Amino acid sequence: MKRADVNFLQYPYILWAGLFIFIPLVIVLWYSFTVAGADGDAVFSLENYERFLSPVYMQVLSRSAVLAVKSTFICLLIGYPAALIITRLPRMWRNTILLLLVIPMWINFLLRTYAWMVLLGRRGVLNRILEFFGLPGQEWLYTETAVLIGMVYNFLPFMVLPLYSALSRIGKETIEAAEDLGANRFVVFRRVVLPQSVPGVIAGITMVFMPAVSAFVVSALLGGGQYMLIGNLIEQQFLYVGDWHFGSSLSIIMMVVILLTMALVSLYDKGASLEGGNLW
Amino acid sequence: MKKPCTGIAVLILFVPLVLLTLAGCSKETQIVLNVYNWGDYIDESILDDFEKQSGIKINYETFATNEDMYIKVKQGGTKYDVIVPSDYMIEKLIKEDLLAKIDVEKIQTYKYIDSRFLGLRFDPANQYAVPYIWGTFGILYNRTKVSDPVESWDILWNPKYAKQILMMDSVRDSLAVAFLRLGYSLNTTDTAQLTEAAELLIQQKPLVLAYVGDNYKDMMVQEEAALSMCWSGDAVFVREQNADLEYVIPKEGTNLWLDCMVIPKSSEHQEEALRFIDFMNQPEIAQRNIEYLGYATLNTAVFDLLDTQTREDPALYPPGEVSSRWEVFADIGDANVAYNRIWTEIKSR
Image (cartoon, rainbow over all chains, first blue to last red):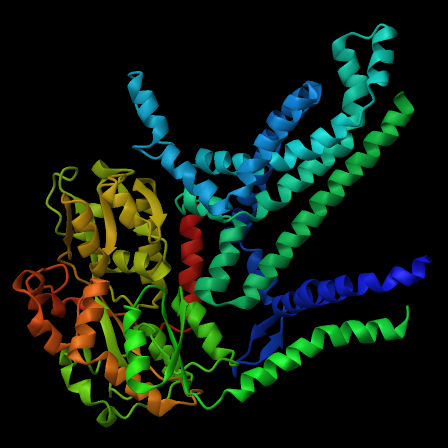
């Protein structure tokens, strides 16, 4: 069969993408560059973006970014060794562990987050355990730590899975070759495993950072509404204030932040592989 | 690219659409009344009864916030016949000419409505809104955890209860508490007063355990906190779950809130909408509804039917003098922007 014969198969997707991705994006963009005029008409304006530049909103953005970076970093810190260990397990164990990692994702996101409220609450499971051992109960819930825990918990699989797939693709023979040439385990890791897993790291970082920077349910539930993130701000504009224009411009700004981060990360990716080429 | 394929794809997508539209048109003989209400805000069996009695079909939809509802009604394309917005939102809808006038003469059961809830600022001449449910807000506290007398909003600023206090995750409600404490109007748009209230809330923030939505009820029942802002209707529900909880309307005053039935101008079945409103106010129907909801009735006939215990419950039916210290929310118009900015400021601290 010639390629051209199956081209029509892409039309449903093109139509889908046009209707539900492209057109909505254009509408969001249009809203972000207009404000409601005196008679209810939309008037072109940069006011929404100007408004965003005030310290209050910048603070919200920076808090979101910092929290997202923190949770991405923690995910990487936990996820990398976890993925590495999984690849070294016997096949049967490997599949079981991977399944266990994925199963929680079958449960609704909101429910999973809500469950943490039961665990971290003042009279929650964690404090009861502490009290059982005669330790004083702590204030876990409604702190930034709780938000961080919720994010890491929810996004960890997005880090482990791409890392696992990158790490499991590394040929055993390259590691063995390095060992034969006298490299100790640390050198093998640093010079053979780590460079080859960079694509997985990049994929993991992007997949965790994106949902983390736009998260709003986690901070509302586990942060007790005390930590306003950009996701919450957008929710507030659409659901409570009814200012679709400002809400849209916030969404655009968030998209720009995500795009910039991805560009930065992929730049590092290229830099690393270039550097790798030079070094080794 | 081959043209015919695009044609087929378009056809495949549009034919069902056209068929659906046609199918929708052919059954226009049955009148359908579109009712738009808050989530879980009616005994739904009442809707079935109305359908049986009147032969009118009801299409029941719910919303979560006034603003959500407003955007849907304002943008058009919807054909709601009865909606149940709150006080300040009704004022806004009237200002924007989105509501149809209601001829109260046509509602026989209108006479049952307590006159205290008529002629309020959002609809001074009773031309647009028929009150549905009313209530107040106050402080819900746990008797075993709060040793001081709870009689003033000041207690929500008492450092003794640090991290034991819940506030509402809602701009107007939380700011209202600050305004009440400062003795200002709940509808002030004065910049100096707003700033003062914002400072008060920022000062309070370290003491607040969480800014919450509906889950404050569970949290108070499970004793995660000692003090919380609370709506009168919810107070009845939580007290049944935990006997240590008590509801008080502080001495500085409170907010009187009302949700009313209104008919949008775009409604095509205004007569039937009136019939529905009339039906909802029939004493036996209103009684069933209020017993299901647990809120306070504004139907005088229903009030007379209540048992003494409920009737004398100060949470639901506060003593008469409270009505001199309550204020209804008004539409604050452009000041909304300032309000929300303040809220963002408080929450981003």
